[in-house]
Image 1 (tube, rainbow, N blue to C red):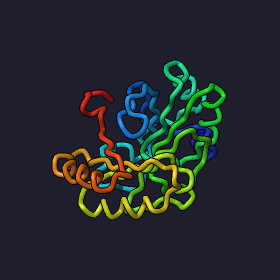
Image 2 (cartoon, rainbow, N blue to C red):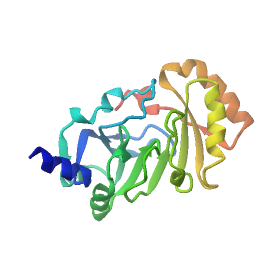
Image 3 (tube, helix red, strand yellow):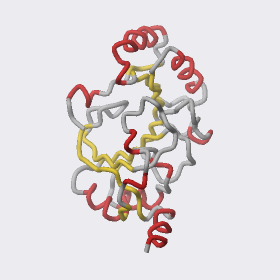
Length: 209
């Protein structure tokens, strides 16, 4: 039975589901939009400031049939956000195909560290220094969201911005635990470099998931 489950996971027909919930998108371009979040377990990127470290170990979460995930999502919203962890650790083809059949708008939040699978209406690329995005992401990203933890992240942000397509929207977002220190620097940077926009984790200010 375990081997059968492993095969289904490898095909993307089952996924390690960490959590799923209906809420308001708090970040980036679609902030303020009602959306159904599907958080998939598993990530080896290893950001030291990650606020979802419990998502890293996929073995902690029950392998769940994609049709079950889709059925749950379809009860709540036409907008679905796939996040993690790093969702592209797994094949997103079957999940997104089934969501599309339900007429859903499908967004992904990804580091870009793994090859792109699935069909997406919006790709939020949030690159990390320790495991850089695959080149394929730069031409398809709808928004680039760089998390700013220290001054060197501004250099990294500009480096990443030089690679994305011309339609990609550029965001700088303060790392939550360091926000009081970095927000003034982000504001100053964006005022000097207005191609960038400020993204805040508004869901945390609103005290919602």
